[in-house]
Amino acid sequence: MTDISYLDESQIRALLKAARMNRRDYLMLLLAYQLGLRAMEVCPMQAGQFDTSTDKVFLTVARLKGSKKTRHELAPETAALVREYIAGMGPNEYLFKGNRRTAGSHIGYTTFYHAFLKYAKQAGVPLDIASPHILKHSAAMGMLPNGVKMVQEHLGHKSGNSSMMYLSVKRSEVDAAAHRSLVGAL
Image 1 (tube, one colour):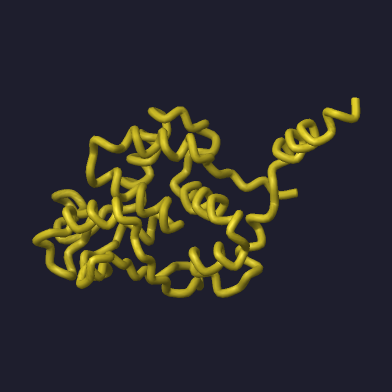
Image 2: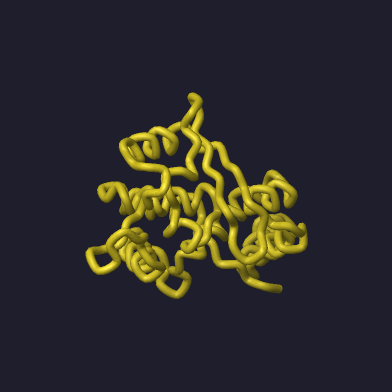
């Protein structure tokens, strides 16, 4: 049995709440979670990847590691934040700009990682599972009640086999379910 580490809904809320006062970091974490993105799919994001030509906002992502390109309609609150954030940006401008040493470039993984870790600590996320990739796993686990096919489409997996790993459960979840279900037999 493979344990997939992920954050539950209350942990995600606490993480996002911790980042809320920093608009850039909040948007990075929000997009990574809601769309199940890898850090390296968020870092080089450009304004032109967002289609704001209608009342809805769509984001097209060229997924990494052999996954399919995906197009996502953003939740209304996220769409409003993106519209505000990219206002006045050219289509080739990076959303999450690098520092003075990397002028004209985007932030790197290390910057994303440190921002994530800062807010994870504030939110009380156990440090042994605190990695930006946990946002992708958390999105998948949140989508799982809708079916493996939904997870596959949302994450851009070419093969359903890649999404099947989310059917694995933690030993602690199996034990807790057994305790709840079997308590009446005692």
